[in-house]
Image 1: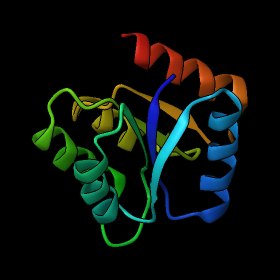
Image 2 (image 1 turned 180 degrees about the vertical axis):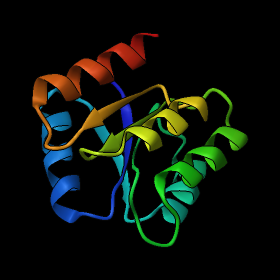
Image 3 (image 1 turned 90 degrees about the horizontal axis):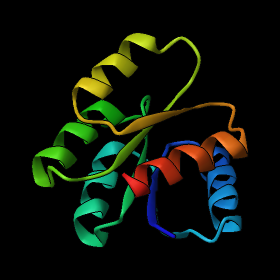
Length: 120
C-alpha cells in the first residue's frame, strides 16, 4: 500500500478520494488545497504518490507538477482532471505525470491507476 498526498481545492473531491483510497488500505499522509501548498507538503511528507487536481487557485496542478518533478525527478504524480481538459492532460504527461484520473471518480478507475503507478 502507498502513502499518498492529495492536492485539490475541492473539499468534497478530497473527501471522496480519501475514502476510496483508505478503503483500499492506502495511507493519506496529507492534503493540500492548492499547488503551492501541495509542493511544500510534498517536500515535507515525501509521499509515494501525489494526486494533483489540474485547476486550483494560487498555483495550478501543472505548475505544482513541474516544481515537484524538479525537486524529485522520481516523483509519482497522478493528475486529476475534469471533462474538457485534454490539452492540459497532454501538457501534464509531457511534464512527467505518471497517469491521470477523471472526475467524477469511479473507485475502480482510481484504484487501478494507483496500483499501476505504485507497481511501475
